[in-house]
Length: 154
Image 1 (cartoon, rainbow, N blue to C red):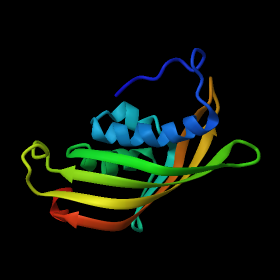
Image 2: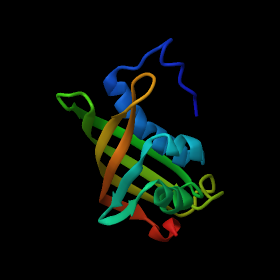
Image 3: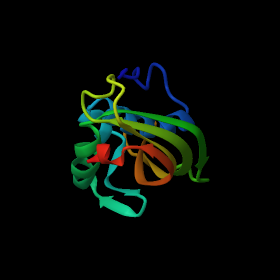
Image 4: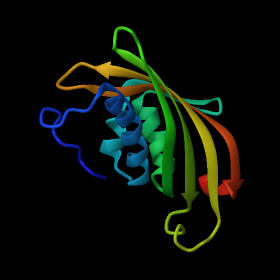
């Protein structure tokens, strides 16, 4: 994935920075880039998919990255809505996503895949440091529909 320019030379707006936290996570999954994936989360982050939770960065690395990054995947995130708190330190985000999954090496073979339409509900926080960096503290994924072979997911 592309590396963003230095914040000092081309600063992102707060909304762009908030959206970028989600993009870092899904691009990290799709490109099997653990550093990029981790850069989008707080240390105490919670990931909930259809009521199944993983708590803390270590659990996210093992449960989420450990399973999804081993697949041929693409995650398309769209219809993003962002509400920044009055203090400017937290934000709520909702988005829709299409998540396509194939077993590793099977994506170009036209074989069985699993496609899911999901809703993201996200809590994002501004982190101290240089520039305007935001990270996901809580990500809830609700599957609205799916088609294909769910056994692809492991």
